[in-house]
Length: 188
Image (cartoon, helix red, strand yellow):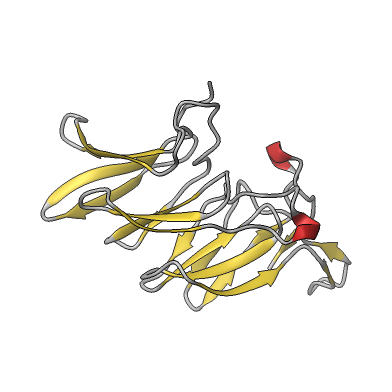
């Protein structure tokens, strides 16, 4: 029932141990030992892991201490990389006008103190890596006049997520995708 791994894993090392951290569409996050593939820990980040998938789809991120995953049901969860303990969960609910576009399926990006997520509602959010508090948000589902002066439209954010490049954050916006998102064509 669509329970595969739809995103790349995250290679990590802690306490001299190398492992692969992977989020599954069922809502489980697992740490696999690189030598032999044994499961070091497994954490359910959603209540129901047996229904149709779509909980973790296109990828998480890690700062080396915690790993962060956007959830198809809406929200961001942080788990400790050494033991899988849930550090925090922040529900992210779209504004009423965008209520039919819930979820944070796209890949996340993180720095030492921030987690960035783009939602199906077109909102780009920065959260505190320590607490999960939303620090700011920016609506990308609007019209833009880009550098090439051709009118463009932002929209939902799904399969491609924000990317940190030095002191810049690059954000693709406009993805109809698998959840009838808001189409668009901008790179911000």
